Image 1 (cartoon, rainbow, N blue to C red):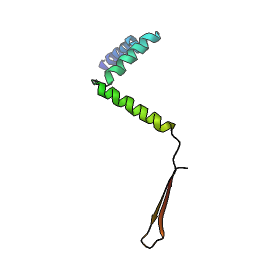
Image 2: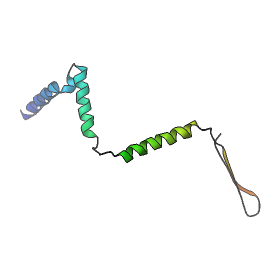
Image 3: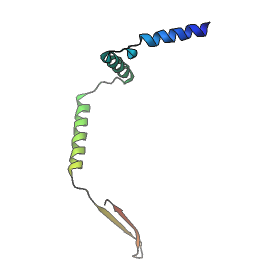
Image 4: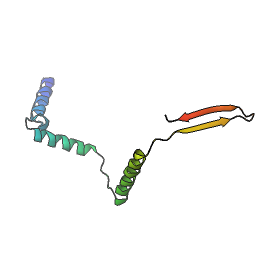
Length: 89
C-alpha cells in the first residue's frame, strides 16, 4: 500500500511542477531558478573584471597575428644533428 502512495505522490509532484507547464515562460523561469541555485555565489571585484578584459584583449591580439613557424636544431658534441623539431606548418 505504501508503494502505491509513493507513486501517487510522485505523479502529483510531476503534475504540479512548473517544468511540466504548457507555458514556455513558466518553464524557462523554473529552469533559470534551478541553474541559478546550482551556480556558486561569488563576489566579483573590479580587479576580476579587469583581468577578464585584459585576457580577452590579449587573446584577440594573438589571434590577429600571423602564424609563426619555429625550427629547432640540436647538435651532438661531435657536430652531428641530434634532433630536428619543427613546430607549425
